Amino acid sequence: MRSLAAACHHACMSAAGDDIHRTRKHPPESSGGIIPQSQSSGLGRHPGLRSYLRFVGTFKGALVLVMACFAVSSGALAVLPVLVGELVQSLAGASGSAGAAYRYAAVIIGCNIVHDMTWRVGELLYREHLTHRGYEYENLLFRDVIEQRYPYFVGKFTGKISSYISTLGREFRDILDAACFTYVEQVIRVPSVVAIMFAVNVWSGLTFLAAVLLMMLVGRHTASLSFRAEKGLADQVSEMDGHVIDVIANFVSVKSFRQEGAEYREVCRRRRDVVVAARRSALWDIVFWMSMSVVVRYLVWPVSILLNLHLYLSGQLTLAEFATFLSVLVMFSDFIWVTVWEIGQLNLRLARAEEAYQYLFGDSADGGVAGLVARREELPDAPAPARPGRASGPGRLELRGLSFAYPDARARPVLAGIDLAIEPGEKIGVVGRSGSGKTTLVKLLLGYYSVPAEAVLVDGRPTPNDQLAAGISYVPQDTALFHRSIRSNITYGAAAEVSQEKVELAALRAHAHEFISRAPAGYDTLVGERGIRLSTGQRQRIAIARAFLDDKPILILDEATSALDSESEVLVQHALEQLWCGKTVIAVAHRLSTLLNMDRIVVLDGGGIVEQGAHRDLLDLGGRYRSLWERQSGGMISVD
Ligand code: ADP
Image 1: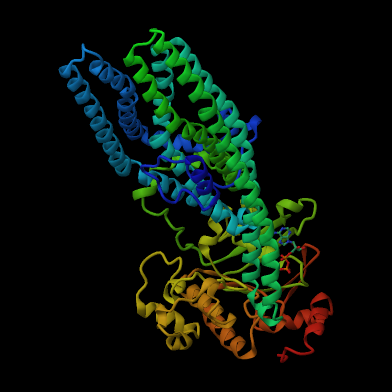
Image 2 (image 1 turned 180 degrees about the vertical axis):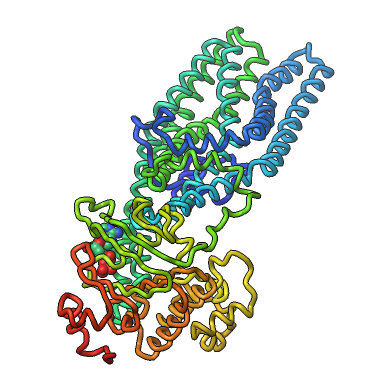
C-alpha cells in the first residue's frame, strides 16, 4: 500500500520543506511547477542553480564529508543480499557449516551497525555543518533583494517577492537535504542491485536492468503528468490566496458595504476550482504510483521469480545465488519507487526554484549570482555597511538640466531640463497640478531613480544617486510604519543607540509625546501593520519625530499635511516649522495654504518650471500660480 499512502500524503499539498526530513524514507510532499523538457538540462538555463552551486562551493569540504558518510552507510546495506545468500548457502545441506554461518551472521550484523553508525555520524555532521547553510542562503537572498533599488520594488508585488525568497530558500534547502539523505543512497543502490544481479546470472541482471530502464521511462512520463496537474493545483491555490489577501486588505470597504456574505460566497465559488484541481492532481498521483506498481509487481516479480526458480531447479543457480536474488528483489521493490519519484522531484524543485529566481533576479545585471557568492563571507560577522554620514556642507542644493522619464515610459519625459538652485536654509515650496511631476522630483532628489550625478549637486558637488539620501531627511506623504514599537519606529535608521530622553524630546517637538504617553504601553506600544492603529496625523508626527533624530541639513516634505483634519494639520504644521528651522527645505503640497511661509514657490508644469517667486509676487504675476490659488482659495486658506 505504499503507493496509495504516498499518493495521499503527496496530495496534501502542504508547503513541504520547512522541516528537513533527516531520516526520510518516503516520497516528500510537493506542490507546483514542472520544468519543460527543453529546459531541463544545461546549467546555462539554470541561473538559480548556478548561483546556488557557487554558494555550495564555499562549503564543499563539509558537503563531501557528509556525503561520504552516507555513501559508506548505503554501501554497507547494498552488500547485504550477497551476504544473506552466503549465509543461506552455508546452512544448506549436509555440508552446512555452523562456523561459516556465524561468520556471515556476524558480518551481516556488523554491516547493519556500520550502516547505522555512519548514517548517524552523517546526520550529526549535516546538522553541525550544513543545516544552517540553507538558511544562510535565504539571508543572502534577502540581502540581494533589499539592496535592490527603488524601481525594483515598484515593478513587483511585495507579497510575491517575499514568498519567492521563501520558495527559493526552501527548494534549495530541500535539494541539499535530498542530495545527502536520498540521492547518495540511490546512486549507490541502483547500480549495486543491477551489478549483483549480473553476478548472480546474466539473465537476472538483464531483467533488473530492463526493469530500471522501464520504470524510469514510464515513471518519467507519469510523474511529469502528475507534476503538471500539481502545478495546476498550485496555480489555483495561489490565485485563491491572492483573492483572499485582496479581500482582507480591503476589509474597510467590505465592512462599510456589508459585503461579508458576498465575499464568503465568492470564496466558496472559487474554492470549487481548487477542489477540482486537487482531485485531478490526486488522480495523476495515483496513476504514477500505479504505473510503478505495474512494472514492479506485475512484471519484475513474476518474470524474475519464475526465471530464477527455473534456473535454480535446473541446477544453473546455487542456493546462495537464489537467496541473494530474493533479497535483492525485496530490497529493489522497496526503494525503486523512491528513486523514480526523487528524479521527478528534483526536476520539480529546480523548476520552482528557477521560476522564483527569475522573478527575483531575472532583470538584474548580475542576476544576483555574483553578488550572492562574492560577498558571502561578509554576512555573518562583518559590520553593517557604513551609513552614509551626515553631509558636511550647509545644505545647498542645485539641479542642472535635470530631465527624467520613467523606465517603462521612456518616450514620455516627466521632467525636462529643470534648473534650480536652492540656497542653504532656503525654504522652497513646489506646486503644480496633479501629475505635473512634483513627487517624481522628490524621488529623484532622494536618489530612487538613476539620473546623471552632474544633474544634482549637493553643496556644489555632483552627487551619485545612491549617496543623495545621506544628506536629506524625508517626511513622506503617507508614512507607513513598521509593525514594531513606537520607539523603534522613531529611532528607525538612527546610526547608534538613542537614549529614551532623546526619543521623548524628538516626540515632544513633533507633538507626538502626548498621544504616545496615552497609548497602552507608551513608547513600547506596537503600531499594527503599516501603523494601522494610529491615525494619519499621528503617523506623520512619528515620521516628524524620526526626522528630528535624523538631523540632516536638507529636509524634503511630500504633501505632508494633505490628508489631515484641521486640528492635526495645525499640530503637524507647527511640528514641521520647528523641524525645518535652520534647514534647507523643499516642500511639495497641493494645498497652497501650507506654502505661505515659504521663501520661494516653484511652479511645475509640462515637465518644467514655469514660474517661481514669493507667494505675493506670483499672485501679482497673474499666471499659473494665481489660477491654482484661485481654484483653492474657495475653502481652505486664510489669506496672508
Ligand atoms: P504629482 O506628484 O505632481 O501629482 P507625479 O510625479 O506623481 O505627479 O507623476 C508625474 C507623472 O509621472 C504622471 O503622469 C504619472 O502618471 C507618472 N508616473 C508616476 N509614477 C510613475 C511610475 N512609477 N511609472 C511610470 N509613470 C509614473
